[in-house]
Image (cartoon, rainbow, N blue to C red; front, side, top):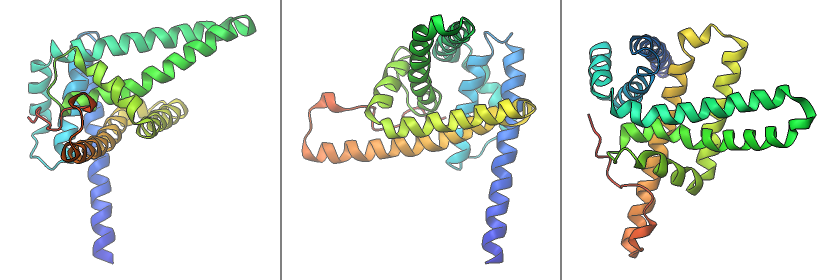
Length: 225
């Protein structure tokens, strides 16, 4: 029993240390790229390395992060930045409509609904980018399909995002220490399980001979670094 709890405590501390390190690396490399051209590849590197960490691959964290960040300067920016820009635009509009009071209630609620839908889709983009090798234009589309096909999974990811955001709003110092890393870790951990369930479902459908257009995602994770 003692060994069991010692092992779990060690595992928990290891995960927390990983989240804190990824948090620092994301912030540092985002700034290194001038924010606009840094955040996309920083998130791509963070999700890719977190996937490796969860699956037990050997990692030289800082060196590998820097290598992936340089490699993903174009691809990571092309995939991540549009999602972030649209999200920030909707959030800005929501804040604006909130400030206008009751007269803008309809616009505020519509913007909030769009923001929630986008957040549900965006939650899959990073893990999907780290896990599947798709054309750049397909990540947002496939994330949309997955979010709609598995609403329960999407709700879980939204809850994780909302909880992380709430805790960070209460304790802002967490943004500089662990919040982003914890969200990336939890999202990746969950999505790997969701993707595995999807692959198992597709395998069952293949045995039953389903139409090819019922596939939601590629069954094989081709992007394995």
